Amino acid sequence: MLVFYTAGESHGRGVFAFLDGLPAGIRVDRDLIDADLKRRQQGYGRGGRMAVERDRVDVLAGLRGGLTLGSPVLLAVWNADHENWKDLMDPWEIRPGREFTTPRPGHADLAGAARFRHKDLRNVLERSSARETAARVACGALLKSFLSELGVSAHAWVTRIGPVAFEGPFDRQARDASSVFCPDERATREMERVIDEAAQAGDSVGGEFAVVVEGLPAGIGSSTQWDQRLDALLARHLMSIPAVKAVQVGAGVTCGTLPGSLVHDPILPGSPKRRPTNNAGGMEGGMTNGEPVVLRCTMKPIPTLLKGMPTVDIRDGRAVTSAYERSDVCAVPAASVVGEAAAVIAVAQAVCASFAQPSMEALTAAFSEHRKYWEAL
Ligand code: EPS
View 1 (cartoon, protein in one colour):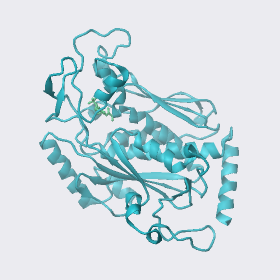
View 2: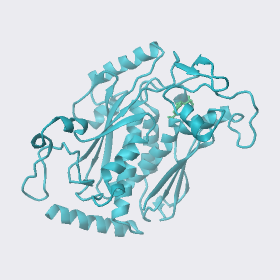
View 3: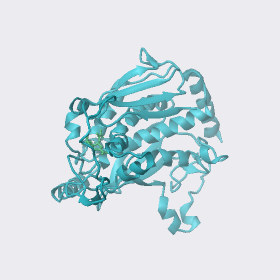
View 4: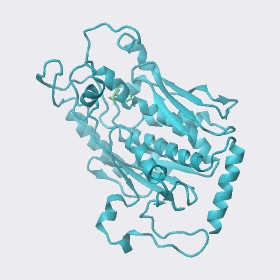
């Protein structure tokens, strides 16, 4: 089993990722991790915090000479902004008087106050902050090295910002040239305009992104138990990205509007068995079916608004307007990078569950043997 957890507060010393259960001998590409961390920091509509941070991975355990050891891996991404928050984030002593008591509608603040009985909502928001996603991206980028040795890759792009949608094909160069990670120049300009308008109005804006995983043979995941279904695992990882409100697999919600004969993808003769369409999004019965895995996620607008929202002060129940210091206007481009990492982590977990081996050499052999079986079926 590949265990994955993160730790760390938004303005604490850093964010951290813990991975246990990886085989020994994966050659890890540090530049790839730092490139993904940098990509996650970008995107039109980001706020002041990203001007402070220069995210890079620091490997604290589990690697030697660029190779995984088969022991637990511990990754750190240090928070440069911690310097400015030392007093407020001191693990041992906090001076009273700077408590945050006005929960932002849409954020974890109020629900967290109920869950943990915190009176200072900073104790909730520090961990619920999307800063945590830097740790996920570091982890996902490390696992890209693992999956790439098996011939598996993932990519994500933005398909909507507010009312502006892009339904065209993926193009890596065009995506990387876009300020919103949308592989279309015209859509990019319109999306920038929507973000500008939201910023001018003191508001925020959400959107959608697509994630595709390619190169998986059929039969990864399992139909035998709810928690072994790969579509469910992918959805859980993606839904757990802060602000994601919907995850769709393949044709997703459209499947409920069409007859079966238009939804299900015909099986063509030949080896391997291919499909002329991919409404299933590469998933049947909780397992891959040999087609690309296609996922789509919807992100709500950022809840921290310059114009504020009606809320209450939890000290006395008075009606007030929610507070604002700084925030992103739109983080959908960054979320697409996180989505890519989340999908990679889920797929790596499913691969490790199916082909558990202590060494990469043995795991690659087992995986290749399975791929050959599928390709000859
Ligand atoms: C976030 C609020 C902002 C974002 C942050 C998520 O941070 P701050 O409160 O420091 O201005 O910038 O995202 C990140 C720090 C990041 O690395 O993505 C929130 O409340 O969720």
